[in-house]
Image (cartoon, helix red, strand yellow):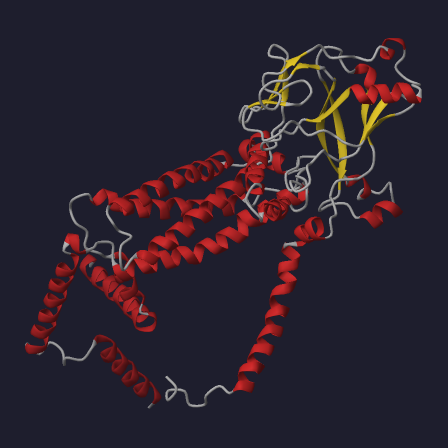
Length: 276
Length: 237
């Protein structure tokens, strides 16, 4: 009884997986994105990038939740944060996660950069991934800076004033920078609106595709260079796969046709049968 | 490369693409760019300010302490996101008109203390005398004559509390007889002169100020900013 259910479930799920794979190629893609040989030594260090990804995902999720109660006006901003902290169910938890994971995000980014730097992970052909990573770092710094003002308390207010005035000392463009951020020539409602727009839309919308590019480049080149004999391992793996395929072909398990082609033919035959 | 191209781009094609591209590009980019950069156009190109240019009441000059600076709250009207000028003019009592945005800001008033001996750099090392309060203030607190008003104005320090370094609010510390900025430790003497710390200059002075018949001081939102350094100003109203 249980054995039959198990077989049926596994058949059904296998059918679903095959169906999706055939139409989207998602299984191969996931395998490609998730599985990677990792050297035993120092393996924990290679979780730092994932830690950054995890904390930034937390930022996105808790940020979306906070938007349900936050009001970006000078009259209401502080009160709405106070409401989140004191009255909303689990508000302290949600905002706490947003606040603390923002702090840890910066720490993880620092450690991640250090790990990549000291292991030489930025060298050819991975230079562009380092560049994308630095752009991501700058965007995250922008997010931290703009998020600080949104609380509209004394701490965030003066820290932002100081930050903007530092920007105003930049050569040639200083005045434009600060007038852009202020939304005029004094701190006021326009400043809060701008910081809000930059914090919740402009920077997250910029950061998301860049994270995608970062991950794509990572998977394109792999994490490890030749110092971990990565190329050798991969060559051996491919060789083994080829041998297995060859044995299957020899023993007559399949007709040597690639998987997708087989499915395609099966589907076509199915359609033709339905049509008759 | 050329043989790969089936129909090569001619000169007129190229020009057409260029002209059309420029037109379409302008249509696509100018509105959003101007929308977002509006404040830069208004402040840097048109030279407008969000802060009201009118006179604002500070307080009676007779209340300025004889020994140390006194602070007064001034609320400058701010025209930013909220507040439609036309509606405010037509319906001054409507709810929208009362939503004028104001931010309280402190102004430090003190009587000028004579510099008895010049220091090395800025006001650092200056030997400063006692603040000189005009004697007329012992007799009356309002209804000054023109000459008396001029005397009061010549002896009054009208300083913005926004630090000349990065804009934090400075506070007077009586035990040190100095203004101290809480952010990075900028120090100023009672006349607002630079004494120590990172500020590149002394405290900002309000340049447009007057004492009126009722004995109160009025100021405008204008500061002694050196030409060429106009990008550096107190941005906190």
